[in-house]
Image 1 (tube, rainbow, N blue to C red):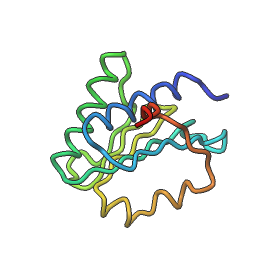
Image 2 (image 1 turned 90 degrees about the vertical axis):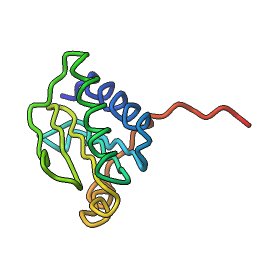
Image 3 (image 1 turned 180 degrees about the vertical axis):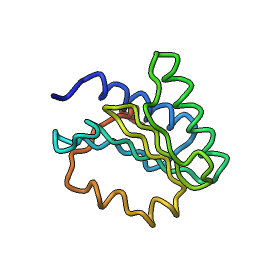
Image 4 (image 1 turned 180 degrees about the horizontal axis):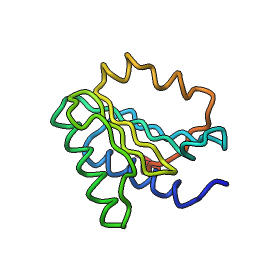
Length: 122
């Protein structure tokens, strides 16, 4: 059964990544087809420094809400990281790594979740 708390976490994490100038931020709803998570968040960064900044921004701010990753990988990687919060998995990729692993193709059949605020009309 899907937990709406995880949707809120995914949206919050997407907004935190956006605040650190991450790009191509996508949240995929697993639609009950995964036993690993309800939502997957995929984030693109430009360089290793931004990778660390986004990882820290997401991790620190979710800890303030009492949320800790059950698993993390890529701790020493300069190209990708993964944070598993149980119902949400966060993938942070450098551009080339995201393209190489083709994550958007993997999740092409899943519904996307709108996470950003609507832009004000010009």
